Length: 352
Image (cartoon, rainbow, N blue to C red; front, top):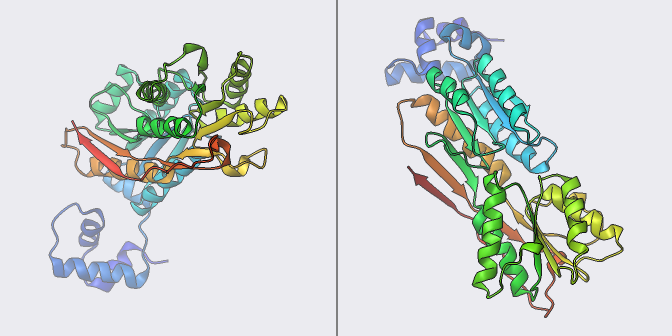
């Protein structure tokens, strides 16, 4: 295996010059840089990240803190972060808060003590803790929020458009003839839970349907809460003719509750899910789902983190919003027999 000395000898330059090219730490003439890069390619040289960290006193490790590692949505997000980290010669420490704020704070403390270069976090609430953020800021460690916002105005966010996604989901049900539409969403302390609930209400109002609090249930993004809250909604008289469920794990619980009662989707109750995992379906009906670009969310968050690491003097906050798409299945089949149109993909960026 080639080392930095071999590269220097092959290119006819000093080891220091090779190091400057690798780390982009000082100007190097174009002709010399090309010789070094050609030598690296010819010798298939790959720098040792750990050794580079020791020499530069800069970590080549980033922290990734997700809220539920068992959720397939986050597996796609993790893959996106990991892919970009490897391209930039960084390693990833993966942590799971399990939707617990105390556990989240504990892992942030661990990442701080490990002296990571930066952190990407799926926050359990809008507040990451001022003391925690202050310590990272003082050390110059950037934090990127992904999937959910935080209140701190200095933290960049990479998000999927929950308001648009919920609007398309509920609008699709209304267009297909459903009028008594229930919702199971996540905690209002989490922006995705709150925004999907608010968009659900506003979409009903825009269609001339008055929101009804007895059709609204707040869960915690777990299968268990989806099951229990669906049972509550099915006990209503009359029961809902459709459900919008704002998370894939709660949808699994809802489907189990519906099947346990011997009811059928969509004949007895229609379903639209957020981020539903098709291979996990307990029955033959395909589930209409708002699909988020999970892997792209992860890769975009990582790219923004590396931008921050390369340009730490940048102070403006950036919010990058990716559009979800509505993937239509049999679970929301039109009462009148008419179809609906899926939403289009897109990206919006806001600077603050």
